[in-house]
Image (cartoon, rainbow, N blue to C red):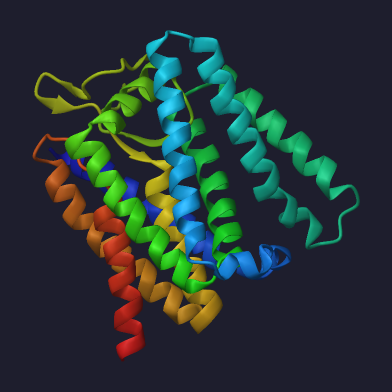
Length: 282
């Protein structure tokens, strides 16, 4: 039980690190601010993104059920490399480093190759932090507050349906573990745990949990609001939003400990929104 509690605390630490990095790197990613122009204030943008995510998710599940392992891995690793390229580029561009685009592209490829060769939990987490921080900043700076709030609400509903009703998100999580795909943060609850050797089904062994998993989206989606809060109301607003999400994560872990799959976004998004509302009321 002690090791499981420590794993949960470490998972919260990952969430905290990613969001604090997003808050601190806010000025660096200024090149993306208002990048979508008028489209960034369109409430329907949130619906478009949800439809896109659902379509991609169903496609991935279809490919997984067809047993096309190499195609599945190719899609995931390409997506990760592409996302890291966009996420890393501002870090070099901000300091006026020559060939920033080529450097960020090369670095994203090298990191992706390292992940392919060593698909262990620490590599998956490292890549996850890089990706979620960058993408949260890009979306948080590109969209206005209303579409972001709608986005969080829609994704929370979708996550609940996908876990409790259709259960396709549970199948997707099993596939991610089975094929060692970079889509979830992994925190071992046992010293000898290896993500590389983990099986796709149950994370319990002898009645004890081997590891805790949290989708990249569970950090990314509320992280977008954290960035947007800082953009619109200042750093303190971002901190309040983050604290709200962390408080909600405690409740989420209580539910996770029941042994049943739980959707993270209904808790985390609600907590982030509550944190922002509290800031605006005081």
